[in-house]
Image 1 (cartoon, rainbow, N blue to C red):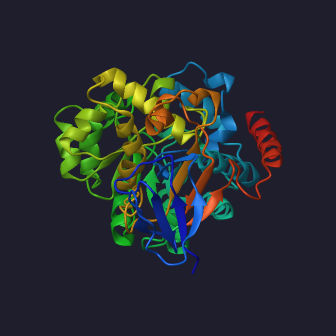
Image 2 (image 1 turned 30 degrees about the vertical axis):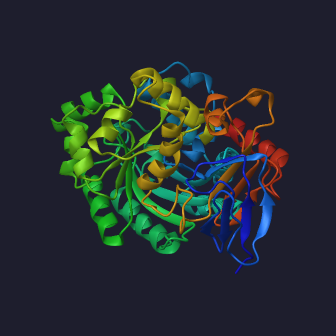
Image 3 (image 1 turned 120 degrees about the vertical axis):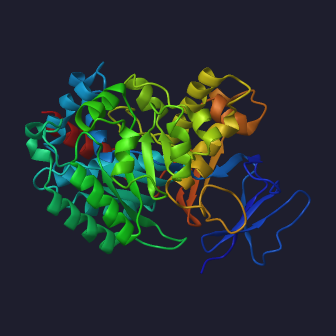
Length: 446
Protein backbone atom coordinates (compact mmCIF):
# COMPACT_ATOMS: atom_id res chain seq x y z
CA UNK A 1 0.00 0.00 0.00
CA UNK A 2 1.29 3.45 -0.91
CA UNK A 3 0.19 6.99 -0.15
CA UNK A 4 -1.93 8.50 -2.90
CA UNK A 5 -0.17 10.95 -5.22
CA UNK A 6 -1.88 13.96 -6.77
CA UNK A 7 -0.31 14.89 -10.11
CA UNK A 8 -1.29 18.51 -9.50
CA UNK A 9 -2.22 21.26 -11.95
CA UNK A 10 -0.42 20.07 -15.10
CA UNK A 11 0.32 22.51 -17.92
CA UNK A 12 -1.82 20.18 -20.06
CA UNK A 13 -3.16 16.66 -19.74
CA UNK A 14 -4.48 14.21 -22.33
CA UNK A 15 -7.71 13.47 -20.47
CA UNK A 16 -11.22 14.85 -20.13
CA UNK A 17 -12.30 16.37 -16.84
CA UNK A 18 -8.84 16.35 -15.28
CA UNK A 19 -7.76 19.98 -15.63
CA UNK A 20 -6.27 19.93 -12.13
CA UNK A 21 -4.67 16.54 -12.60
CA UNK A 22 -5.19 12.99 -11.36
CA UNK A 23 -4.77 11.06 -8.13
CA UNK A 24 -3.08 7.67 -8.23
CA UNK A 25 -2.97 5.06 -5.49
CA UNK A 26 -1.69 1.49 -5.42
CA UNK A 27 -0.96 1.51 -9.14
CA UNK A 28 -4.40 2.78 -10.19
CA UNK A 29 -5.86 6.14 -11.26
CA UNK A 30 -8.43 6.68 -8.50
CA UNK A 31 -9.57 10.24 -9.18
CA UNK A 32 -9.73 12.85 -11.94
CA UNK A 33 -9.56 16.34 -10.46
CA UNK A 34 -11.63 18.74 -12.53
CA UNK A 35 -11.38 22.49 -12.93
CA UNK A 36 -11.97 24.39 -9.66
CA UNK A 37 -11.91 21.23 -7.54
CA UNK A 38 -9.68 19.74 -4.85
CA UNK A 39 -8.96 16.01 -4.53
CA UNK A 40 -11.54 14.04 -2.56
CA UNK A 41 -9.01 11.27 -1.88
CA UNK A 42 -7.79 11.64 1.71
CA UNK A 43 -4.06 12.07 2.32
CA UNK A 44 -3.09 12.72 -1.31
CA UNK A 45 0.43 14.16 -1.54
CA UNK A 46 0.91 16.67 -4.33
CA UNK A 47 3.47 16.41 -7.10
CA UNK A 48 3.56 19.88 -8.64
CA UNK A 49 3.11 19.35 -12.39
CA UNK A 50 2.63 22.97 -13.52
CA UNK A 51 5.68 22.65 -15.80
CA UNK A 52 4.64 19.30 -17.27
CA UNK A 53 2.48 17.99 -20.08
CA UNK A 54 0.93 14.71 -18.91
CA UNK A 55 -0.07 11.90 -21.25
CA UNK A 56 -0.75 8.17 -20.81
CA UNK A 57 2.42 6.12 -20.82
CA UNK A 58 3.36 5.22 -24.38
CA UNK A 59 3.11 1.55 -25.41
CA UNK A 60 5.58 0.04 -27.87
CA UNK A 61 4.00 -2.81 -29.84
CA UNK A 62 6.92 -4.07 -31.93
CA UNK A 63 10.65 -4.21 -31.33
CA UNK A 64 13.74 -6.40 -31.57
CA UNK A 65 15.88 -5.42 -28.59
CA UNK A 66 18.88 -7.45 -29.71
CA UNK A 67 19.21 -5.34 -32.85
CA UNK A 68 20.56 -2.49 -30.74
CA UNK A 69 23.88 -4.28 -31.28
CA UNK A 70 23.78 -3.51 -35.02
CA UNK A 71 22.84 0.11 -35.51
CA UNK A 72 24.00 1.68 -38.79
CA UNK A 73 26.03 -1.39 -39.78
CA UNK A 74 27.73 -0.64 -43.13
CA UNK A 75 26.92 -4.03 -44.68
CA UNK A 76 23.17 -3.45 -44.15
CA UNK A 77 22.90 0.17 -45.29
CA UNK A 78 20.75 1.05 -48.29
CA UNK A 79 19.21 -2.43 -48.61
CA UNK A 80 15.62 -3.61 -48.78
CA UNK A 81 14.29 -6.12 -46.27
CA UNK A 82 15.45 -9.49 -47.64
CA UNK A 83 19.05 -8.48 -48.50
CA UNK A 84 19.13 -6.45 -45.28
CA UNK A 85 18.31 -9.60 -43.30
CA UNK A 86 20.87 -11.64 -45.21
CA UNK A 87 23.55 -9.10 -44.28
CA UNK A 88 22.65 -9.07 -40.58
CA UNK A 89 21.84 -12.69 -39.72
CA UNK A 90 25.53 -13.76 -39.63
CA UNK A 91 26.24 -10.90 -37.21
CA UNK A 92 23.31 -11.72 -34.95
CA UNK A 93 24.47 -15.34 -34.88
CA UNK A 94 27.50 -14.20 -32.82
CA UNK A 95 25.40 -12.95 -29.92
CA UNK A 96 26.29 -14.08 -26.42
CA UNK A 97 24.16 -13.85 -23.27
CA UNK A 98 26.26 -10.89 -22.11
CA UNK A 99 25.78 -9.08 -25.42
CA UNK A 100 22.02 -9.69 -25.37
CA UNK A 101 21.74 -8.37 -21.82
CA UNK A 102 23.53 -5.17 -22.82
CA UNK A 103 21.34 -4.73 -25.89
CA UNK A 104 18.01 -5.28 -24.15
CA UNK A 105 18.98 -2.99 -21.28
CA UNK A 106 19.92 -0.22 -23.72
CA UNK A 107 16.70 -0.67 -25.71
CA UNK A 108 14.39 -0.68 -22.69
CA UNK A 109 16.17 2.24 -21.01
CA UNK A 110 15.96 4.31 -24.19
CA UNK A 111 12.26 3.50 -24.48
CA UNK A 112 11.57 4.49 -20.87
CA UNK A 113 13.40 7.78 -21.25
CA UNK A 114 11.21 8.59 -24.26
CA UNK A 115 8.03 8.12 -22.18
CA UNK A 116 7.33 4.43 -22.81
CA UNK A 117 5.78 2.51 -19.92
CA UNK A 118 4.96 -0.81 -21.64
CA UNK A 119 6.95 -2.50 -24.37
CA UNK A 120 6.81 -5.67 -26.36
CA UNK A 121 9.83 -7.44 -27.84
CA UNK A 122 10.06 -9.98 -30.66
CA UNK A 123 13.10 -12.13 -29.95
CA UNK A 124 13.49 -14.96 -32.45
CA UNK A 125 17.27 -15.48 -32.82
CA UNK A 126 18.56 -18.32 -30.64
CA UNK A 127 22.15 -19.24 -31.55
CA UNK A 128 23.91 -21.86 -29.45
CA UNK A 129 24.43 -20.61 -25.91
CA UNK A 130 21.52 -18.17 -26.10
CA UNK A 131 18.71 -20.62 -25.44
CA UNK A 132 17.64 -18.60 -22.36
CA UNK A 133 17.22 -15.36 -24.28
CA UNK A 134 13.74 -14.65 -22.92
CA UNK A 135 14.97 -15.22 -19.35
CA UNK A 136 17.68 -12.58 -19.91
CA UNK A 137 15.05 -10.12 -21.12
CA UNK A 138 12.78 -10.73 -18.13
CA UNK A 139 15.62 -10.09 -15.70
CA UNK A 140 16.54 -6.82 -17.41
CA UNK A 141 12.93 -5.61 -17.42
CA UNK A 142 12.58 -6.31 -13.71
CA UNK A 143 15.77 -4.35 -12.97
CA UNK A 144 14.44 -1.33 -14.85
CA UNK A 145 10.83 -1.58 -13.67
CA UNK A 146 9.23 -1.44 -17.11
CA UNK A 147 6.03 -3.29 -18.00
CA UNK A 148 6.68 -5.87 -20.75
CA UNK A 149 5.03 -8.31 -23.12
CA UNK A 150 7.95 -10.41 -24.31
CA UNK A 151 7.41 -12.78 -27.19
CA UNK A 152 9.07 -16.17 -27.49
CA UNK A 153 9.91 -15.93 -31.16
CA UNK A 154 11.05 -18.71 -33.43
CA UNK A 155 12.59 -19.70 -36.76
CA UNK A 156 12.92 -23.26 -38.05
CA UNK A 157 13.52 -22.67 -41.77
CA UNK A 158 17.18 -21.99 -42.49
CA UNK A 159 19.03 -21.39 -45.76
CA UNK A 160 19.26 -25.11 -46.44
CA UNK A 161 15.45 -25.31 -46.19
CA UNK A 162 14.87 -22.39 -48.53
CA UNK A 163 14.67 -19.75 -45.78
CA UNK A 164 16.80 -16.68 -45.13
CA UNK A 165 18.60 -17.28 -41.79
CA UNK A 166 21.75 -19.38 -41.40
CA UNK A 167 21.48 -22.80 -39.79
CA UNK A 168 23.16 -21.55 -36.59
CA UNK A 169 20.25 -19.35 -35.47
CA UNK A 170 17.24 -21.65 -36.03
CA UNK A 171 15.79 -24.36 -33.77
CA UNK A 172 13.64 -27.42 -34.39
CA UNK A 173 9.91 -27.38 -33.77
CA UNK A 174 9.94 -29.56 -30.65
CA UNK A 175 12.57 -27.38 -28.98
CA UNK A 176 10.66 -24.20 -29.84
CA UNK A 177 7.32 -25.45 -28.55
CA UNK A 178 8.80 -26.89 -25.35
CA UNK A 179 10.59 -23.64 -24.52
CA UNK A 180 7.52 -21.61 -25.43
CA UNK A 181 5.53 -23.55 -22.87
CA UNK A 182 8.34 -23.19 -20.32
CA UNK A 183 8.62 -19.39 -20.49
CA UNK A 184 4.85 -18.91 -20.38
CA UNK A 185 4.58 -21.11 -17.30
CA UNK A 186 7.50 -19.40 -15.60
CA UNK A 187 6.94 -15.74 -16.42
CA UNK A 188 3.45 -14.96 -17.75
CA UNK A 189 1.45 -12.93 -15.24
CA UNK A 190 -2.30 -12.43 -15.44
CA UNK A 191 -4.55 -9.66 -14.22
CA UNK A 192 -4.61 -5.90 -14.64
CA UNK A 193 -1.49 -5.33 -12.51
CA UNK A 194 0.65 -7.74 -14.56
CA UNK A 195 4.16 -6.41 -15.19
CA UNK A 196 5.57 -9.34 -17.19
CA UNK A 197 3.68 -11.24 -19.85
CA UNK A 198 4.70 -13.62 -22.63
CA UNK A 199 3.32 -14.13 -26.14
CA UNK A 200 4.29 -16.59 -28.89
CA UNK A 201 5.76 -15.24 -32.10
CA UNK A 202 7.09 -17.17 -35.10
CA UNK A 203 9.22 -14.67 -36.99
CA UNK A 204 7.42 -14.61 -40.33
CA UNK A 205 5.88 -16.85 -43.02
CA UNK A 206 9.26 -17.12 -44.76
CA UNK A 207 11.19 -18.31 -41.68
CA UNK A 208 9.00 -21.04 -40.15
CA UNK A 209 7.16 -24.12 -41.38
CA UNK A 210 3.40 -24.37 -41.69
CA UNK A 211 3.49 -27.05 -39.03
CA UNK A 212 5.08 -24.65 -36.55
CA UNK A 213 2.68 -21.84 -37.41
CA UNK A 214 -0.31 -24.09 -36.72
CA UNK A 215 1.19 -25.67 -33.60
CA UNK A 216 2.02 -22.24 -32.16
CA UNK A 217 -1.55 -21.03 -32.68
CA UNK A 218 -2.88 -24.14 -30.95
CA UNK A 219 -0.43 -23.70 -28.05
CA UNK A 220 -1.37 -20.04 -27.62
CA UNK A 221 -5.03 -21.03 -27.46
CA UNK A 222 -4.32 -23.71 -24.86
CA UNK A 223 -2.15 -21.42 -22.73
CA UNK A 224 -4.36 -18.36 -23.28
CA UNK A 225 -1.61 -16.03 -24.50
CA UNK A 226 -1.28 -13.67 -27.46
CA UNK A 227 0.22 -14.27 -30.91
CA UNK A 228 2.52 -12.06 -32.94
CA UNK A 229 4.39 -12.14 -36.24
CA UNK A 230 5.49 -9.97 -39.16
CA UNK A 231 3.00 -9.84 -42.01
CA UNK A 232 2.45 -7.91 -45.23
CA UNK A 233 5.63 -5.88 -44.71
CA UNK A 234 6.95 -6.00 -48.30
CA UNK A 235 5.88 -6.96 -51.80
CA UNK A 236 8.68 -9.55 -51.73
CA UNK A 237 6.81 -11.29 -48.90
CA UNK A 238 3.62 -11.35 -50.98
CA UNK A 239 5.51 -12.85 -53.90
CA UNK A 240 7.16 -15.42 -51.61
CA UNK A 241 3.82 -16.58 -50.24
CA UNK A 242 2.28 -16.75 -53.70
CA UNK A 243 5.18 -18.84 -54.95
CA UNK A 244 5.45 -21.17 -51.96
CA UNK A 245 1.87 -21.42 -50.68
CA UNK A 246 -0.14 -20.29 -53.73
CA UNK A 247 -1.93 -17.62 -51.69
CA UNK A 248 -1.49 -14.19 -50.16
CA UNK A 249 0.01 -13.81 -46.65
CA UNK A 250 -3.35 -13.13 -44.96
CA UNK A 251 -4.90 -16.23 -46.56
CA UNK A 252 -1.96 -18.24 -45.29
CA UNK A 253 -2.34 -16.77 -41.82
CA UNK A 254 -6.01 -17.73 -41.74
CA UNK A 255 -5.23 -21.26 -42.94
CA UNK A 256 -2.82 -21.58 -40.01
CA UNK A 257 -5.48 -20.58 -37.45
CA UNK A 258 -4.17 -17.10 -36.68
CA UNK A 259 -7.05 -14.86 -37.71
CA UNK A 260 -8.40 -14.24 -34.21
CA UNK A 261 -8.41 -11.86 -31.23
CA UNK A 262 -5.08 -13.12 -29.90
CA UNK A 263 -3.14 -11.84 -32.88
CA UNK A 264 -1.42 -8.56 -33.53
CA UNK A 265 0.74 -8.13 -36.61
CA UNK A 266 3.81 -6.02 -37.29
CA UNK A 267 3.76 -3.65 -40.28
CA UNK A 268 0.60 -4.44 -42.28
CA UNK A 269 1.80 -2.37 -45.22
CA UNK A 270 0.48 -4.41 -48.14
CA UNK A 271 -3.10 -5.41 -47.32
CA UNK A 272 -5.66 -4.86 -50.04
CA UNK A 273 -9.18 -3.47 -49.61
CA UNK A 274 -10.79 -6.91 -49.32
CA UNK A 275 -8.44 -8.00 -46.54
CA UNK A 276 -9.03 -5.13 -44.14
CA UNK A 277 -12.60 -6.14 -43.18
CA UNK A 278 -11.34 -9.68 -42.61
CA UNK A 279 -8.74 -8.38 -40.17
CA UNK A 280 -11.42 -6.41 -38.35
CA UNK A 281 -13.81 -9.36 -38.21
CA UNK A 282 -11.06 -11.49 -36.70
CA UNK A 283 -10.21 -8.72 -34.18
CA UNK A 284 -6.60 -8.72 -35.41
CA UNK A 285 -4.68 -5.50 -34.69
CA UNK A 286 -1.71 -3.89 -36.45
CA UNK A 287 1.56 -2.40 -35.18
CA UNK A 288 2.47 0.51 -37.46
CA UNK A 289 6.26 0.95 -37.69
CA UNK A 290 6.66 4.23 -39.55
CA UNK A 291 10.42 4.74 -39.19
CA UNK A 292 11.35 1.18 -40.11
CA UNK A 293 9.05 1.14 -43.12
CA UNK A 294 10.66 4.33 -44.39
CA UNK A 295 14.24 3.18 -43.68
CA UNK A 296 13.75 -0.08 -45.60
CA UNK A 297 11.47 1.55 -48.21
CA UNK A 298 8.83 -1.10 -47.51
CA UNK A 299 5.86 1.16 -48.20
CA UNK A 300 3.27 2.92 -46.03
CA UNK A 301 0.78 1.20 -43.73
CA UNK A 302 -2.75 2.28 -44.80
CA UNK A 303 -3.65 3.36 -41.28
CA UNK A 304 -6.81 5.34 -42.01
CA UNK A 305 -8.33 2.65 -44.23
CA UNK A 306 -7.56 0.02 -41.61
CA UNK A 307 -9.14 2.08 -38.84
CA UNK A 308 -12.18 2.81 -40.98
CA UNK A 309 -12.55 -0.96 -41.46
CA UNK A 310 -12.47 -1.41 -37.68
CA UNK A 311 -8.84 -2.51 -37.15
CA UNK A 312 -7.03 -1.23 -34.05
CA UNK A 313 -3.68 0.47 -34.81
CA UNK A 314 -0.72 0.74 -32.43
CA UNK A 315 2.82 1.99 -32.90
CA UNK A 316 6.13 0.14 -32.77
CA UNK A 317 9.69 1.40 -33.04
CA UNK A 318 10.76 -1.94 -34.60
CA UNK A 319 14.34 -3.13 -34.34
CA UNK A 320 17.18 -0.74 -33.68
CA UNK A 321 18.78 -1.90 -36.92
CA UNK A 322 15.94 -0.65 -39.12
CA UNK A 323 14.95 2.34 -37.00
CA UNK A 324 18.32 2.83 -35.30
CA UNK A 325 16.75 4.24 -32.17
CA UNK A 326 14.31 3.07 -29.51
CA UNK A 327 12.47 6.35 -29.00
CA UNK A 328 8.71 5.95 -29.00
CA UNK A 329 7.90 9.65 -28.82
CA UNK A 330 9.95 10.19 -31.96
CA UNK A 331 7.99 7.32 -33.52
CA UNK A 332 4.77 9.19 -32.71
CA UNK A 333 6.02 12.19 -34.69
CA UNK A 334 7.21 10.00 -37.57
CA UNK A 335 3.84 8.25 -37.78
CA UNK A 336 2.02 11.58 -37.64
CA UNK A 337 4.09 13.05 -40.48
CA UNK A 338 3.96 9.93 -42.64
CA UNK A 339 0.20 9.48 -42.34
CA UNK A 340 -0.52 13.22 -42.55
CA UNK A 341 1.42 13.27 -45.82
CA UNK A 342 -0.59 10.29 -47.08
CA UNK A 343 -4.09 11.37 -46.01
CA UNK A 344 -4.00 15.15 -45.58
CA UNK A 345 -4.50 17.63 -42.77
CA UNK A 346 -8.20 16.89 -42.23
CA UNK A 347 -7.69 13.14 -41.71
CA UNK A 348 -4.71 12.93 -39.31
CA UNK A 349 -4.01 15.11 -36.26
CA UNK A 350 -1.39 15.05 -33.51
CA UNK A 351 -4.04 13.53 -31.23
CA UNK A 352 -4.47 10.62 -33.64
CA UNK A 353 -0.76 9.86 -33.44
CA UNK A 354 -0.81 10.03 -29.63
CA UNK A 355 -3.90 7.79 -29.62
CA UNK A 356 -2.12 5.19 -31.77
CA UNK A 357 0.75 5.06 -29.26
CA UNK A 358 -1.53 4.77 -26.24
CA UNK A 359 -5.08 3.44 -26.52
CA UNK A 360 -4.43 1.83 -29.92
CA UNK A 361 -1.27 0.14 -28.71
CA UNK A 362 -3.08 -1.08 -25.59
CA UNK A 363 -5.53 -2.89 -27.90
CA UNK A 364 -2.62 -4.54 -29.71
CA UNK A 365 -1.21 -5.99 -26.49
CA UNK A 366 -4.62 -6.95 -25.09
CA UNK A 367 -4.42 -4.57 -22.12
CA UNK A 368 -7.52 -2.32 -22.10
CA UNK A 369 -6.57 -1.15 -18.60
CA UNK A 370 -3.57 0.68 -20.12
CA UNK A 371 -3.24 3.55 -22.57
CA UNK A 372 -5.74 6.04 -21.10
CA UNK A 373 -5.92 8.55 -18.27
CA UNK A 374 -9.28 7.55 -16.85
CA UNK A 375 -10.77 6.23 -13.62
CA UNK A 376 -9.70 2.68 -12.85
CA UNK A 377 -6.92 2.57 -15.44
CA UNK A 378 -3.39 1.65 -14.39
CA UNK A 379 -1.21 4.53 -13.24
CA UNK A 380 1.21 4.56 -16.18
CA UNK A 381 2.02 8.16 -17.09
CA UNK A 382 4.61 10.15 -19.03
CA UNK A 383 5.37 13.77 -18.11
CA UNK A 384 7.25 16.14 -20.42
CA UNK A 385 8.72 19.59 -19.82
CA UNK A 386 8.61 22.17 -22.60
CA UNK A 387 11.69 24.15 -21.54
CA UNK A 388 13.95 23.34 -24.50
CA UNK A 389 14.63 25.64 -27.46
CA UNK A 390 12.60 23.35 -29.70
CA UNK A 391 9.43 24.29 -27.78
CA UNK A 392 10.03 28.02 -27.39
CA UNK A 393 6.98 29.96 -28.53
CA UNK A 394 4.58 27.01 -28.49
CA UNK A 395 0.84 27.51 -28.20
CA UNK A 396 -0.91 24.15 -27.64
CA UNK A 397 1.26 22.08 -25.28
CA UNK A 398 -0.07 18.69 -26.42
CA UNK A 399 0.41 19.59 -30.06
CA UNK A 400 3.91 20.83 -29.25
CA UNK A 401 4.95 17.37 -28.04
CA UNK A 402 4.37 16.01 -31.53
CA UNK A 403 4.95 18.98 -33.81
CA UNK A 404 8.04 20.35 -32.07
CA UNK A 405 9.63 16.92 -31.67
CA UNK A 406 9.64 15.94 -27.99
CA UNK A 407 12.08 13.12 -27.47
CA UNK A 408 12.71 12.77 -23.73
CA UNK A 409 10.33 12.54 -20.78
CA UNK A 410 11.16 14.36 -17.56
CA UNK A 411 9.17 11.95 -15.41
CA UNK A 412 7.71 8.50 -16.05
CA UNK A 413 5.39 6.60 -13.74
CA UNK A 414 4.77 2.86 -14.14
CA UNK A 415 2.22 1.09 -11.94
CA UNK A 416 2.19 4.14 -9.65
CA UNK A 417 5.98 4.23 -9.16
CA UNK A 418 8.40 6.84 -10.52
CA UNK A 419 10.78 5.04 -12.89
CA UNK A 420 12.22 8.15 -14.57
CA UNK A 421 13.04 11.18 -12.43
CA UNK A 422 14.46 14.44 -13.79
CA UNK A 423 15.08 12.81 -17.16
CA UNK A 424 17.09 9.88 -15.74
CA UNK A 425 16.45 6.32 -14.58
CA UNK A 426 17.36 6.16 -10.88
CA UNK A 427 20.27 3.83 -10.20
CA UNK A 428 21.16 3.22 -13.86
CA UNK A 429 24.83 3.81 -14.69
CA UNK A 430 24.32 5.05 -18.24
CA UNK A 431 28.02 5.60 -18.93
CA UNK A 432 28.87 2.10 -17.75
CA UNK A 433 26.01 0.61 -19.74
CA UNK A 434 27.17 2.37 -22.89
CA UNK A 435 30.74 1.08 -22.47
CA UNK A 436 29.45 -2.45 -22.00
CA UNK A 437 27.05 -2.14 -24.91
CA UNK A 438 29.60 -0.64 -27.29
CA UNK A 439 32.05 -3.45 -26.48
CA UNK A 440 29.33 -6.04 -27.17
CA UNK A 441 28.40 -4.36 -30.47
CA UNK A 442 32.03 -4.30 -31.55
CA UNK A 443 32.36 -7.99 -30.70
CA UNK A 444 29.38 -9.16 -32.74
CA UNK A 445 30.13 -6.90 -35.68
CA UNK A 446 33.66 -8.31 -35.69
